[in-house]
Length: 282
Image (cartoon, rainbow, N blue to C red; front, side):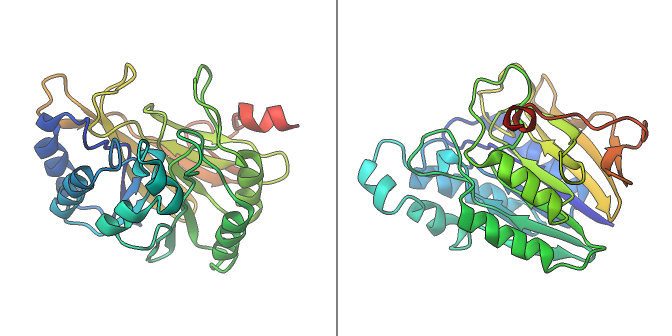
């Protein structure tokens, strides 16, 4: 059994400072084996913002796995954006933008989906996808395989953001290569749902909202707790209280790996949802 905390979209430079201590207290109190951060640690990729994000992560006692988001490359400094888009990010969080961690029989693989040439829309390049697939296929079959990246593959109805380039190919390739769970951010909305793949096993997509940003899009600041082992996962959303003095858990949702992929444990006979991105490509 592995315990992960999934944080996303901290957006230092536009945070709610009153949530810093409650977030640290909540995460450390859960004693996770790993804290996975799915991008947008800064608001405008400025050194001070990265330093503040790094200082917060230093206060979290568990090991960290961090991937960049689209806000983690400069927006207004076009020369730096074109020539060295990740330089400031690397100075704060290291050179490896696609780290990997093994937690016993659970593998966590980071993927960089940022396209420096587009402000919002991410991209799954062919070379990057090939690298991810090789990593997945090299793992023992019984391993629970988790992918962490910033841009979601499937967007909920009403989303005003475009899916990343290569989303459909990535979803299908992940499924065929044996991936189980994909952790993402970007949209500042929460979700945990299984999605049916036309030519593979259903995947479990888990979306974190924003941990600290003032841009909440009508939802509370939150993070996810994921207790998992091969074949099963329990997802608990922790939301900030209105008083911003604590993060409190919602009712956990449980998922199991069934005959055709991941399903909700409460209704294992139900068909997984068919994602709009997948349907549009058929």
